[in-house]
Image (cartoon, rainbow, N blue to C red; front, side):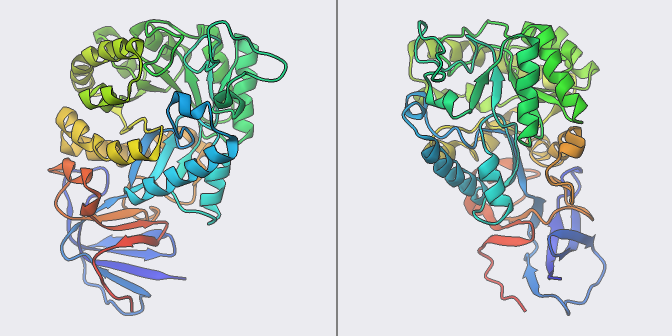
Length: 425
């Protein structure tokens, strides 16, 4: 058994604003076994890390990424499956070096990448996979190259769809089978597309996608396997239909109104608002005039969305919707902490990226691919996924926008970055 100790640290546990001061953390193999401020002998440890009075926080959790969506729309349409896999593995590695020790993948065939990470062939965060995102014909994930294109016996005429990043299913029976296929592949939750999107060409933002019967089919399949459905949507009608049908995690939601926010609260549904996609800087990555019009509509809803989330104390988790190429992800994933901090405050943002994700993952029950330890918190029984940081992100979360402030990155008891220059003993 490998034993490590982090001494001289202050601990943010992922739940409480108050730090555990003057503490030490004992790690045995890949689990935290003790966090205490009592005296402890530094003998009989394989490695001692002196945090120098710094704050230790749980490894960050991004609850909305697309690891295998590794380029813009036109770029992905020219990409073979093997290139997608290599790029996705690189995306995953770089997310870990940004401090994200766990991610929830919101659509994309990531089983191979996840398996290679979990078995040590490559490095990256823990992945809660949805596998293929499921959507309707003429919906957000219908990536056929033109309005007149038709499905043929040879496939969807779209590499994105041939690679099963998205799949189409129409009618309750097709949706049920598609959801079960993802569960067969090991999905920890099911991802549906229930409305229009900014980045898609042929589905207007206002569209409501999937009937309640179709949504219920996916919800039932997920429920039968002990898990839940997450859904892409923007409009109130889409959100209300999703909640009525039993969807438990709503992604984006920028156009919510008071009635919808109340409904979300009353049903205990989670929200992953991805607010940075309504920032002005995103205009540089939106290619067509039609997409820019949809972006402006979404942007107009963000202020009200923020107010309603605060007013009704909605269950919120941190998510960035990181996708496309490595340069985009590198520039924007950590910058989102600045956006979140301005909208929700430092403590709530950090909590959303740690302890609240821990609470959300409970919905996966026995579909949780990592049941041996706790994720998103620092307490006895947690995985040894943690960061030692300069400054106090509980009070100033935008410190996390600069990865140079991460002095130590540890996942599963393994150190991937250490600029404290301590010697093991």
